Amino acid sequence: MQSTQMQPLSGKELEYIADSISNEDLLIKQLAATAGSTQNSTVNQICSQQIQSHTHHLGVLVQLLQQHQQYAPTQPQQ
Image (cartoon, rainbow, N blue to C red):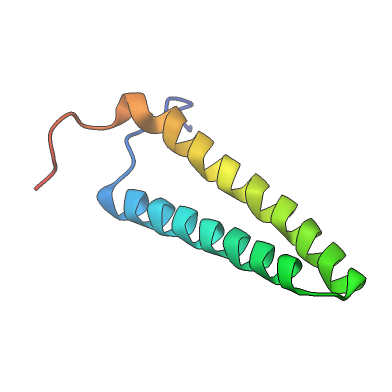
């Protein structure tokens, strides 16, 4: 039987999520730079679609952290 109560995220899980947030942010910035420097409307459209997708991913990751914030330890884990 599975419990529906959230458990605290491990340090490894938090690091993975933080890395994923950084990666999504970098992808958004790279796509925006590409969209801003291209004259090709197809490339611009694809970049815009991908920016929306990665912005959504970023939001999901941030929301996940916020949902688990109340379960985070108040003292650093050793």
